[in-house]
Image: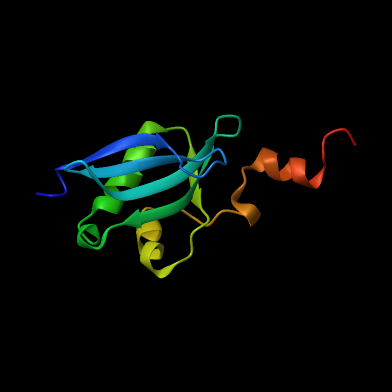
Length: 118
């Protein structure tokens, strides 16, 4: 019942850095959050954080949230910077691989290697 009663609402990330959040709200209370960033230029997305309150773990809500992101960004290839016990299985089930160094998209990685103006 709680699974269906949870709304998925997009929001800017509270931490500045070009990230966005997908808030999971149940009866006017935030019970989870997926933090991510996307790049329109190279069609890559990176999941940087997944947080779910204890009563909402194991009921498929994480899967629902990540599936929602995939439906909102159908042409984006998703990766993750996460490697903790609580999210590892979820990301493996959703077939979201680890991101390369720094979790930046490919054009940002090449800009770091060869800075502009050189």
